[in-house]
Length: 157
Image 1 (cartoon, rainbow, N blue to C red):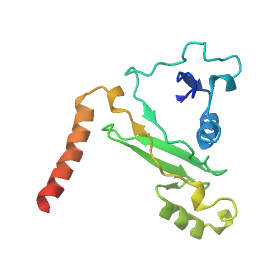
Image 2 (cartoon, rainbow, N blue to C red):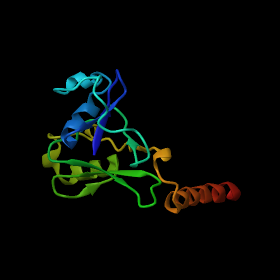
Image 3 (tube, rainbow, N blue to C red):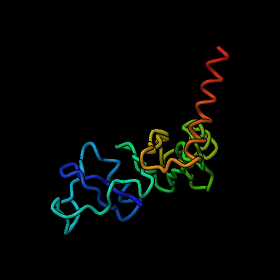
Image 4 (tube, helix red, strand yellow):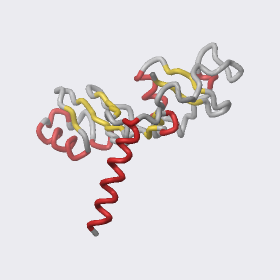
């Protein structure tokens, strides 16, 4: 599910498609979103969804460019709920995980160099809102494992 928060009333509104969400996100700073941008909707209407712990919320950064034509941006939550990973599926079906891999793809497939540039890809990941995650052992295990790595690194120095 995709949602956007109105910049005036701060209510959450569902966004019908991934493409529409990507368009809103790409221009969010220059073109803030308001309930009035949606037909038959106003700030007086009740929120489409409530910000609560009935679902896990992730907050994306604004101004992430829409994926270039022929590519798809995928954001996947890790099984331990500790963080998100961002990938792009390229026109040949290959997944890339960073700008260096985009560079390699363009070098190996020069026919795409005029269709998109490395700057068109953002591997920024949304932030998982911890208070919307049930404090199950899965979440705690993921955080504990991360803390163990930090502690081990500190002890080795």
